[in-house]
Amino acid sequence: MIGFEEFFRELAAEHARWNFIWLYDEKQAGRILSGLWMTIQLSIACVILSVIIGVVGAWAQGAHNRVLRALVQGYIQFFRNTPPLVQLLFFYFALGQFTPSYSPDGWLEVPIISNVGWAIISLSFFAGAFNVEIFRAGIEAVPDSTVEAAESLGMTRTQTYREVVFPLALRVSIPSLNNNLVNLVKTTTQAYAIAVPELLYESVSVWNDFPSAQNPTMLLLFVTYILLVGILVMGMNRWERKMRIPGYGQ
Amino acid sequence: MSWTPDLPIVSLKDVHKSFGDFEVLKGVSLDVMKGEVICIIGPSGSGKSTLIRCINALNDIQRGSITVEGQEVSDPKLDKLALRKKVGMVFQQYNLFPHKTALENVMMAPLKVLKEDPRTVEDRARSLIKKVRLEGKEDNYPGELSGGQQQRVAIARSLAMRPDVMLFDEVTAALDPETVKEVLVTIKDLAAEGMTCILVTHEMGFAREVADHIYFTDRGVIVEHGPPASFFDEAKDPRTKEFLSQIL
Image (tube, each protein chain N blue to C red):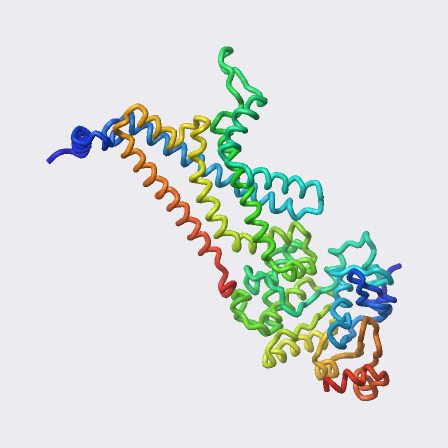
């Protein structure tokens, strides 16, 4: 009977390409885990921010103010029609130059917005652009007559939006939102390009240091993302079921 | 000018309304006194629905004047909230909020618009639901109710705002024949209690029974009007006669 760690040590010794190093080397395990944690944080932050951007954007799209509507439209066109990787590089390298920095010890110059910060901002705006369109489609699916009923009861535009239009639009939007958020979680790997130490970044570091660990680490990447996205989809489906209205839309 | 109950509660004077180049209302005038029930009948496309939608400012008008309790509806400075507190409206397609239960539908406007105490609102909502004979259906969603039941919830929802005038826009037109009656009975109860009602309807028998006054519209004008007895039996205008002969 050999131990778990011993098994993988021997596997690595016998098969040069199958070194599951993070299963028996504590330091490598730590790198993978910290990468995973960063990916989870990045995903949660971007999902929340992008949904907020979507809701606010869809609301602004229906505003009377033409300038505001044009701004939202411009934002959507820019972020939807350019690659997210280019956006990330642009935010970090181009905009990053102009953001102020501070000096904690008098020697170092630390920018106020870190690379992690830029990744969150950039990815949230990217996914947010799609979310605006998703929520807009949901809002358009709410019949004018239902809105009219709310108006004729004396409700203001804001009350009508909050109490009637949004709750109904949200239910219509969940399936498309689901898709977009799945994409967002996967797109967080692109933060690799600006050295955000997320799962892909840490994995590449591991196999650069230990080329024998390349195959197992790639396998780990696939399995981890399948699990992460699976959890998200499960949560979204549960939410969709919970939001279902008896006798409506069936 | 302050309004007193001896003046018309709703008054239309030479109202003109166009959608683009198409003139729907070509000078409509009518007065409704407090407690009166009036029915507007006429062929489809004659501007009946537009007419009552103008009364609570869901449509704006191009010319003329509409007043509700002396307040000018077409005034750009009009406080729409104040107007809509006075005027309740029930639609052909019920237009309930599908994500709220019957009780929540009735409670929403008094809570959000009038900002009344939730307990008072709930008590009133429950008694209104009882009044429209839907006791036991408080926690059902609109999708679980029949058309006639939904329409009665819609009536209760409007009444919850304690309006002075109720507008009914072809409220039985989308219903099965069996359920038409239950809605009409509800409206009749209201009329009997002295609620001022303006109805657009195709239910001639009902109009004859409950209305104090009938208006017949065709192509954007009021062709003829009068109390039901004389209107139905002694119509003078050939257009009215033709319409009635097709219907009755």
